[in-house]
Amino acid sequence: MNFLNEHRAATKRIQDKLQQLLKQHAAVQKENAALKQELQVAGKKISDSQQTIDELKQQTSILKVNADAMSDADKKNLKKAQSLHKEIDRCIALLGE
Image 1 (cartoon, rainbow, N blue to C red):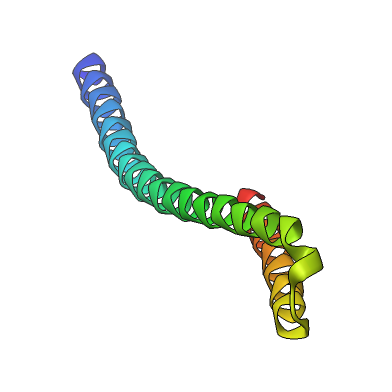
Image 2: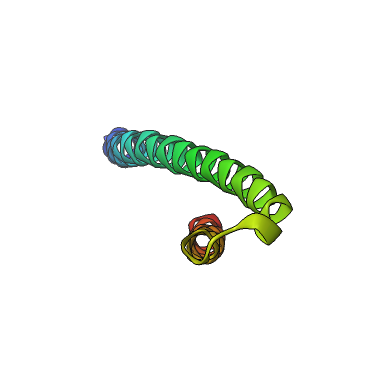
């Protein structure tokens, strides 16, 4: 009879541990799904920012070519575009961390 009680107790401990592991597994799966979603959103932001950077670089290149014929207002706009370009680069660097 003692052996049977020990066997039941051991089976109960195993079942309890299994239930605990199943709960932990479900929690980890939920967290993993949330992290994958976060990663996807961050990747989209980075992609959008990179596209903006590329566009600004192209605009900056065009403006540099025409810099000699630029008015003072155009030169100010060029400096602003360059400043925005640097700021976007910093933002992307922060997103990558």
